[in-house]
Structures are given as structure tokens and as C-alpha cells.
Amino acid sequence: MMRTILATLMLLALASPICIGQAPQSGPCEVPVAERTNEFGCYFVAAKELGVVPPGTLFWHLYTYPDLAAAKANVGPRGMVAQSFGKFWVYTIEQKEWSPKAGERVAVVGPLPHEAGKAYTARYMEAVFGPNTSTRVHTHSGAEAWYVLGGAQCLETPEGTTVVRAGEGSVVREGPPMVLSSVGTEKRISVLLVLHDSSKPWSTVQTEWKPKGLCAQTANTPTGLFVKFKVKPGKNTAFETAFRQMQASMREREPGALYYDLFVTPEDPQTYVIMERYKDAAAVTAHGQTEHMRKVLADLRDLMDGPPVPQQLIFVSEK
Image 1 (cartoon, one colour):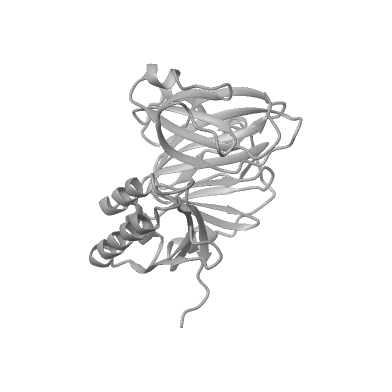
Image 2 (cartoon, rainbow, N blue to C red):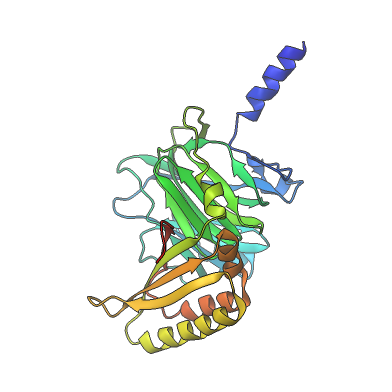
């Protein structure tokens, strides 16, 4: 009898990509958010069957609204209203240039890899996890995208790692097994999308691939970032001024930020690159939580021609 119970418990534990770690977690991305009983976990928010999506490059557009009526007034054919973390959102899958009639743009995340002629479902979730927690190894039948609202996360696949911090988004294509970990000492708070093949399960536990623990190594080693910005014509001076103010605040208040400089590409004066280096992942997380970081992101929103494009750099050596 005891062996039967243990076997059943093991099967249930492997049924979903729930998080494991030091802090107790619940919510394996299947429980509706209205039924959550724990601050931590991954919870289902909403889903929309999109049918066969149009050809071309698609992005996840995230906008917020002051109330439900305003959100409903701005829903398009491939959009839907969601309520997460005390806000009314409209999530829309459209081409990059799309925009609603009104609303506060939070982010545009993508591109979202997909196949022409295939029917897709957009599944939206929200997640809160404490430090030192990781998902089980799993795969998705479509692209997964995140927008991180607080803390930082690290994705490990057989192809390497990607670190995303508060105010940034990221995408992983369909196919590779993955494990997602919290990085640093802050809670990881995110909204997420899986744009999956409607004929297949959205998520599957995978047991063959064994992660190397690269995210844990990232947490304790210097971290570099390469962030590209496209600035609207005529807004260069305002952009550079905002950056210098940010840089001055960091020098005074962020000892973990070792390097933070702005460059412009010689081929295109509207394309800027910020090279960043931090003492460790905790310093990256702290940077994303500072008041001056939040302020500069708000100031830059109207100056940028599209969202910033971050890329993690793996530390190898120093001068």
C-alpha cells in the first residue's frame, strides 16, 4: 500500500513544471489565479484561441488601463483583457507596429516564433517565486515569453542561459528543454505567455536532459549586459541627458554596478548601446529595483522607437 501511495505522489509531482526550492511554492500554472491561496506560485490567468495566425513577425503587446471598461474598449481580434497584480491589462498578439487606440504601453516582447498555417492558443499566466527556486525541466509546444515586473530570472536550456531582470522581456522558442530559476535575493514577479500549438498540450515535463546548474553559477559571478536602444529622430539629446542622470545616480548609490557606459553605433546615430557590468546577479536585481531606474525608464519611454533589446554577456576574463 505504501509503495502505491509513493508511486502516485511521484507521478503527481512530475505532472507540471512547478517550482522547487527552499521556499514552499504552489500553483503549477494550472490553478486559476482567482483560486490562489499562496503568494508564491505560477497561476493561470486567461487563454484565447487565435486560430491560424497571419504570416509575418508577431509580438506580445502589453498595455494597462485604469479600469475594466477602458481595457475592454481597446481589445482587438487577437487581444484579451487580463487582471494581474492589481492592474487591468490588454494582452495582444500582433505585428510590431500595432498599437491600440489608447492605453499605457508597458512592453512589446518578441518576436514570437511560429509556423504559418498552424492554429495557436495564447495562454497567459502570472508568477511569483522566492529566491533559490527553480522549475522542473519542461518543454512547450510553442514559444514562451516573459515580462519581469520584479526581481530577476535565469533561463537555462541546452543552448545556454538568459538572464532577464525587472522591466525586461524575453522569449524562448518552441522545442528545447528548459529550467527557469530565480536569481538574486528579491522575489521574482512576472507575467508570462505560451503561444502554443492548439492541438498539443501547452507544457510537458522532460526527464532526459539534465541542466548544468549554470544559473546558480551566474548568481555568484560578474554579470555583463549589452542593451540596444533605438531612439526616435530628434530625441538624441534628451536620451543622452537622461542616461547621464542615470549614470550619476548609479555611481553614488550602486556599488555593485562596476561599469555602465553609453555608446552610439557609427552606422546609425539613432541606435545606442549600453554596456553594463555588475558584481553579481544580486547587483543586477538591485539595479532594477532602484527608484532612479524606474524614473529613467518612464522618461525614456517616449524617446524610444521600440523596446530596448537586452543580451546577457557571460564573464570570461578581465584586464
